[in-house]
Image (tube, rainbow, N blue to C red):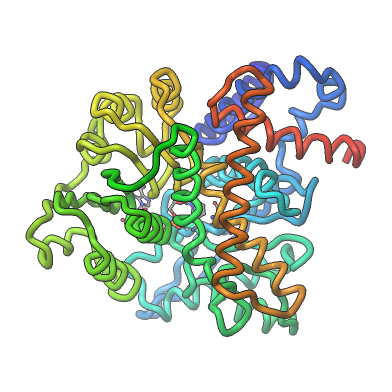
Length: 449
Ligand code: NDP
Ligand code: 2IT
């Protein structure tokens, strides 16, 4: 197994995030490989770490002043063993092949866990939507789709949102796809409600992460009632994590963005959350502005180069990292443990560094890894695809109850797989093993392709 990690390192030595994601899975699945020699002879691991296709393209666009800019566009079509490629698009200046390959790799296992027929993919651009006008974002999205459209389709590859890509961007992307293909079809998910979107899709990742947390606590006859919760980020996932936590009796005390974080000792109630939603989704402002409105909160800037993030050093029962990868390092994890945190549910993808994960597991923290805990988003994307194919829309209650069922099933599957491979309660191993077995069995059935 370490051979595979070494091969990945030799082939693409600079792709740190991809190596990190691969290493984690390889450690978990070692006992599965030992019990199933046929996986080895079919070169399953070598095939899993090589994307089926990587598309990389130029995205030229013009700003409001008439100046031309050039960004890079990407789509990683990682694995289609159990369904069409499925996964989000990320627009953020940090986007590169390493980040998108890690995200696409994790997506393969995550999508397998959802119980729905979806393969794994991810894409995006190093375009930064921050500070851009709506027209600039529209022109960028149109240019991006002018290349992407030839690679995707409702039965081929179905992108959605991720960091920097929400309902606005999906709308512009869909408009251009429809114009180019002359076809109204469910080629993207996260669409607005009145033209093919699903109820609960905006809420799904955050709600799902909280449903997963509630399931983990239930194994110890505990609940979210009265729990003090740290939430990072203040975007889509963070907002709906907070909304569901409030509904289930939790107390949310933090939100952040890439500049800093707010700590509100009195708790972020429904009214304050509504303010954050307006601030972030309509005004596209910064989280710092929260303190202008609510004097109970303190804002602290965050230094990305510091050895720890003070957000994770507040007294709390539960942590919901919902911003970005590697936002909890070893020191942050130790701080959380020292402060007696019981549970970590990852709304973000790979938010905890490998050192951090080891610390959580050594200390018996209820640790829900991203590919399980945040699978609610892509699950409801899968339900959106189903509704599009059937040309009907389910009610809020219908979608929410399916989401809950799927999260419960993922939780159960992780526990069973962890138990079967002698690491009871280890959700990371459980998620990696269960996702892996489903995908590689399909690959074996389909021959050497
Ligand atoms: P949004 O763009 O809505 O929000 C992202 C939030 O994270 C913002 O508050 C942003 O702050 C912050 N953030 C982004 N990059 C950094 C960084 N480098 N350092 C610190 N903070 C950062 O994205 P989402 O809420 O959709 O995504 C959040 C996480 O959840 C990501 O890891 C994503 O992959 C994952 N995820 C999302 C799903 C979805 O359905 N949307 C599904 C499953 C996982 P700022 O505004 O300053 O950039
Ligand atoms: O990381 C993820 O699962 C997402 N960004 C959502 C993907 C999707 O297709 O809804």
